[in-house]
Length: 95
Image (cartoon, rainbow, N blue to C red; front, side):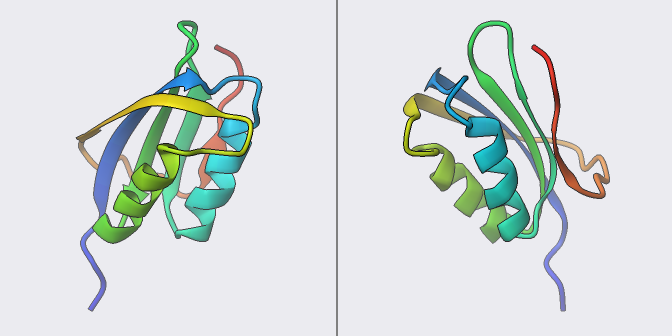
């Protein structure tokens, strides 16, 4: 029996732009079997919309507290949301 699909919005603050955070998040999310998006925000934060099994979402959120080697994460905030039905996990361009 498969786990029900869950949605989580994650906001990451700190030195998280220009350090391959989006690309690394995409790799980690795909490794965990998650779908969704990751994007840079004008205020210097990164936003993630992720969907999948609860355990995998928890693992992605935990990974975000560290991020890639050059990142300096100050805080991670997460909240549940409505499932959007993403098919892949993509890096969104622009701010």
